[in-house]
Amino acid sequence: MRYLGFFLALSFYKILLWLALPIVYLRLLLRARREPAYTARRAERFGCVPDDIKPEAIWFHTVSAGESIAAAPLIKKMIGNLPEQNFLVTTMTPTGSERVHQHLGDSVDHCYAPYDFIFAVRRFLRKTQPRMLVLMETEIWPNLIMQANAQGIPVVLINARMSERSARGYQRMSWLSHPVLGAITHIACQSEEHMQRFINLGVDAQKISALGSVKYDLQLPQNLVEQAAMLKTQLNLRARPVWIAASTHPGEEEQIIQAHLLLRSRLPELCLLLVPRHPHRAGDIGVLVNQHNLSWRASSEGPTAGVYDVIVGDVMGQLLALYSLADVAFIGGSLVDHGGHNPIEPGLLGLPIVAGPADFNFVEVVAQLSEAGAYKKIANADELTEVVSELLIDAAGREQMGSNARAVIMGNVGATQRTLALLGRQLEV
Image 1 (tube, rainbow, N blue to C red):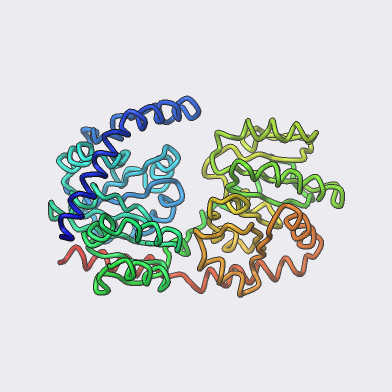
Image 2 (cartoon, rainbow, N blue to C red):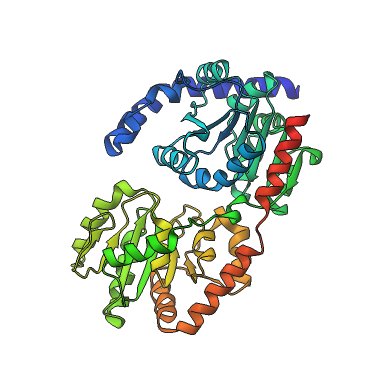
């Protein structure tokens, strides 16, 4: 009876995907109008693998830029351990693709992963014949996982997380989710809490572990200090107080700019580094800044002698250097219901961290940082103004919060090495 239920659920899922195919393709075309990079290599998203992709690789699927950056140190170590082995890294976004080329270069093959249409997945697997599939965080795609399992390909989900909200959704679809999760060879979770949620969904406790988050093992670029110093001169920020709002989303920028207006009434020299999650939105944000009679420039522009109220980040891969210029960091995706973005990067750089109420993407990290006195959660834009103002004025408090944040991050390193050992054991099975 359970098998019949799963068969019907998976069949229904496949039918829904077929019905959605025209919508998916149309959405891809519309996305390409806003972001031209989505125009290129469109066929790869439907399983058409480039001819130069080598078969029998260890396949890492890293989705977007954040996952690509987080996985890069692990992949580099694995390449060092297995120099004769082919490696394939796939993403779903152009920014993720850029990060793969930036961090891994020619040491891996790269293309876009197929959408979860059964024809695309089968076509992709037929061409690539991977030795192992390594998924990151929450990439649980039924057709991909079930087809890989049917072909005897080990599937390992690493850096896995399962929020309470997601767990409730999976529980409602247990006829489908239970067999799909059961087809994963091993799940390496970020924490005991995430592990328990997977177990509650029916995952065999023998096939799951808590190894920590590889995102704690962030490797700062060796030239970061020089890069930040050059950018500080280029943006004419010397001797100015600076705060950064990073990885922001629509609905947040208006609140952040309003807060900046109030902050400037107290600190007239203050500059805001406003870095949207998606750099192509920089122009729209510039229009918003102009509407509030504030001056702005893009971070990619050349050196200037001018003094600007707001600098809008419009270049991928520049965020760490921009963090290095700031005195206080606000984490975007938290004043809207997006779940917040990664607070580990500013924490490692020793910045005091401020964020809104939506933090379900990084609950455990936020809890540790908050307990250490390194993270302040605010409810709205008014509180954002007050907290940032206090931190900008209190240099000693800023320094203590930043020091606490860095201590938390450094106390959680090591997940990369533990995950590397796990993957090695799975290859030997």
